[in-house]
Length: 387
Image (tube, rainbow, N blue to C red; front, side, top):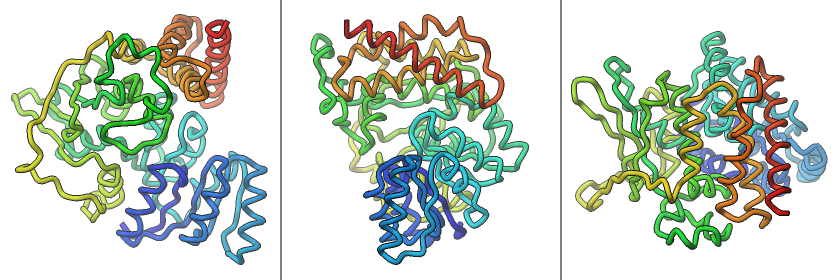
């Protein structure tokens, strides 16, 4: 694939890795978008000279525009949610990396799909919030959704020949930063410890989600949406080495597995070059040197939040959306020192207890309104927790 790309979430880990892979495949950088970090986006504009750049934060976008103009760059700067949505639908970009974290990425992702793009989805929250809507819109507008999460991209590759006879999907989990810490110490885990992932280089929010295993629970919901399977046919297995990213079982007894080093450039390269292959910059796995691989059952005492996620997956309706919104609030509170690590699960449990009181969302506006409502309920729970 050699047409242009728009990268939303360009200043994050996935965004920077996408820029690295795009350079290796000689893919033109049409647009770069981010949240509020104008300094980081300015540096990327100096290096990559995109036609367009956008920041969700309007004041930050104004400062970026001033800096761009002073540097003599031709990059056009857009602002706000509308600016990011405009980048997603640019005709010059046939591919869009949807890497904006959280609910903020929903509308730009939807606009990219409605514009018929190949959409590389690295934001799991948008599929959790509105997966059914996004998949339906993709069918309507001829868009192609390619998952970038290593696990879902692995399943995508394993199902390349079709899903006939599919029996189950198994997503592997590293266990995150807390997998070897004594249970009695979990309430005292610091943000720095939780973000110290043993295998992957990731952003702070997703690193915490990995430590609680909420990340894996959201991935179960994603898998149900992406591959049209029931929640009870998606399994989670602990795999500390993060070499096998997913396994797919079939009725004839065959099990296909995808193996690679834990490097996000691999799924990004696969998604950009699909149906072909192109260099990612990652090293090829040497099976003679990788040693013993371990697979274990998940310890529910260490990862109680996973059970809440699996319950939301089975419940469907508004439950996944409420879960994701509450988790964003709880993780932010933990990272800012206002909530202990184990408090994340407590907040999710309390907010999820009210999920049944919410009606089924119909359309994007209903989804965004319910997202705000769930966030408000999480803030109320946080205030009680602090008291």
